[in-house]
Image (tube, rainbow, N blue to C red; front, side):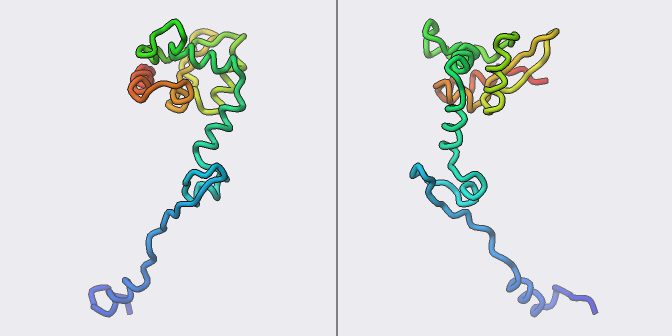
Length: 145
């Protein structure tokens, strides 16, 4: 005999057997910030701590290149930062861009002959100190393939 959920007693059994939705419990990271228990179980740290660790692995010249990619340099007005979002890498800067890409602050773009373009991500804009408005401008400049 086939179970029929149209009967009232069958509907009641189906409701009783339902499991509640998973609850995202808030816990605290070692730094004291709130983070979801699932994130702490997977990564052991909150997002802010992970970002700090990735940025700590970079060299000072990596950050200079990141600032240059966005036009976030002292000789440009801060209200214009983010007016560009590209960098055509040469052999000398290849290692720096690979470190930035491994940390998730830049993405590889199109190839041009034997060179390659790189573009900054939202995490890279945050690391460079761009405001939310200038970050939106910088991210809108990335060429979509």
